[in-house]
Image (cartoon, rainbow, N blue to C red):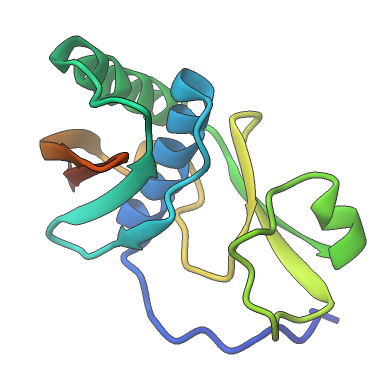
Length: 152
């Protein structure tokens, strides 16, 4: 029997939403920053905000794009497991979790690259995402905003 989770208020475009997970894990790995604190994920284009001490250079932005596309090309499985909140807290960052979140959490894993609590829609394998492309970015007061899309 599948656990009862909080209702989800949005139906994401699975390739874009899964790419967001990969982008978040890439930013954490490359810059040691938290996952995006503000994201707007849509079918045509999306944006994520990261807390960084400085604006990434154009070379770093190109490296982010390349790293995300490398993970996508690895054709990793996207899987789901259900864990009690206490067990999930030892595995993933729960700081963005709403206060009324269920006691059982849905953990989405992208191969060995990422794991996070999420109730959104995802692809089954990273190869279904397409090509990740950074459209633009800007930096203001410690917030780096990146706008991106996936190309089929």
